[in-house]
Length: 313
Image (cartoon, rainbow, N blue to C red; front, side, top):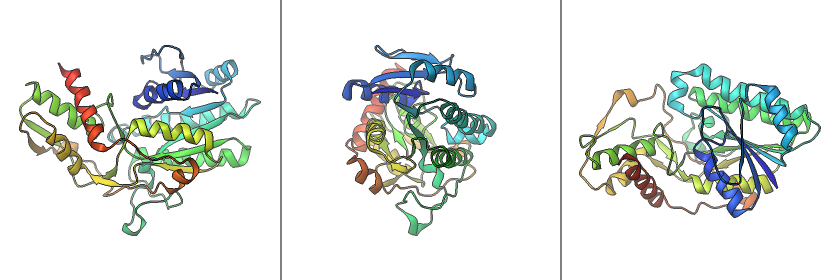
């Protein structure tokens, strides 16, 4: 199978490429922005601006992939509050340009749109763990754009008989994730403190929020299985199926620290609105693909800490 990964230079892209090539032996073509770096042996990489429909059509005409995984996104909730317009441009306008470019061509590749568990937003106590058909109440700019992408994907699948399915991916973590995200941020701070680069104080935001964390290496396995077995027009939760608080994550990180560290809440790290709990019901994914998470959170934290320990030296 020939697969095109749009937006492959981000955190998930490298893991997805390695899984598709090394474990499934698929042919992978990838795109990135001109200023990004991506070089993997055996992968042809193109520069692509998803806001330019002509370049999308030219690329698809040239390579005609069997499947397309659309990873390109502004995926930071914090950044979405600071720059809503950029988030809307990339996540909504960019997605519609991709879908419309594919629609104009005379073939129907399988398309996987990557959404987020943040789309569910303000979850009522009786709704958790949350199913795919739950009412969406996005609580931040990023979540609203991903909910819109999901709805557009469903409309295009129904109206134009396009082979589109979507995921709502809950928090995924692992080595090489940008410190915009909480686990990478905490682990980087710990590594810097261990190296003597920072005083022994770890700065945090809201620790009471509970999130559903999965290792990125488990997540990309789910994406590949959905490309193979997912039902067109459907949406699938991808997560661990169990939410834990940010405070619990922090304690597990501190347990692995080589030095004593104090914790201090930084008001600048608090979000205007923070959903108390987001936990996935992954029954639909399990029944469709047989997927199960395999990597425990303790192992992921060890791997992330070791990544930052090597990076800050």
